[in-house]
Each structure stands twice: as structure tokens, then as C-alpha cells.
Image (cartoon, rainbow, N blue to C red):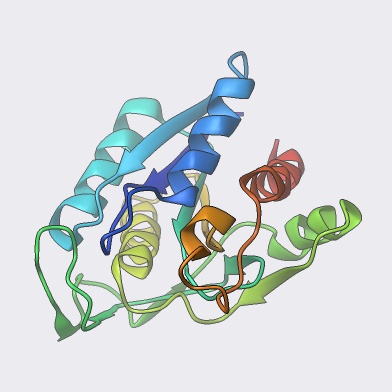
Length: 198
């Protein structure tokens, strides 16, 4: 079972991104596993291309993309990707989009991962988890939709989905009211979810 595990570079003035830190930690601690870590740029026009190139290079059976969502209180598995880019936040190339139908495809696509089973595995580890119906309208959703659309268009036998993770505590030092979760706990949650997929 080959798993492509993606995370994002820092954005929005941050120096770190817990999504990539989690992905790298999992890959570094499971060197014999068929897990391929991939760092994605926080750029609308580049992120999906980088992800699709990796799909073609690695030929994974499963893709789990991970992104940061400041304000979330726990790991969220996204169920729906929408064909919309609409955010006032610039990507790392300075691009701001308020556009419907960024990619040629249906209005929405759905995760093909067993989200309920993945959530249950995390609950058994003693952590809360949510299945979300809103992946936002920024680069995370763009990548989620782009991967699902590519798989559908090319009729590939690949299961794919997306997880949002909270800030880690060091990111909230100056934002004490924002929720956070330790990197170790985030990693344990994602590992529990991956155990369902292997």
C-alpha cells in the first residue's frame, strides 16, 4: 500500500506549518513504510501541478493531504471539496482569487477515504476529531479539489482525502485565545487514521 502524504509550506507570515511538520515526522519515523512525503507550495497555480506530478511519479494507492486551519480545535477530515477559489488572503505568490469554477469540473467532489473509520481510530486514541463539510475556499480546498478531479478525469484507482490540523502551541503565543494542539498529538491522530488505510 503506497501512501502519498502531502503538507504545506508556511504561509501568512508564519515561519512554520504544522501540516508539513506532521507529514515529515511521520515519514521520518516510518522509513520502511511506503509513505511518500510531499511539500506543497501555498500557491493556487502551482500546488495542484506539484501534487499531480507526484501522483504520476509515485503511483500511490492512497493520498492524504494535510493542511493548517488556524481556529480548528482538533483534526478535521474534510468531506467536500468545492470548485471555488474565494479568499481575501493572498497565496505565497501574492495571488488573491475571487473566482467560481477554478478548475474544469463539477461543482463539488467528495473524499473517497473511510472518514468515519478514520475518526473512530482517532477517538480510540483519546482525541476528539471532526468530519467537516467546509474545507474553506483557499489553497487547501484548491488542492483537495484538484487531486480528486484529476483522479476522476483519469479514472485512477486511488483513494484521496484531506485533513485540516490546528495550530501548534508555539504559533499561538501571541494569540492566547486561539486553540492549538501539540505536534505530537496531531501526529498521533494522523498516524491513527493512516492505520485504517494501510
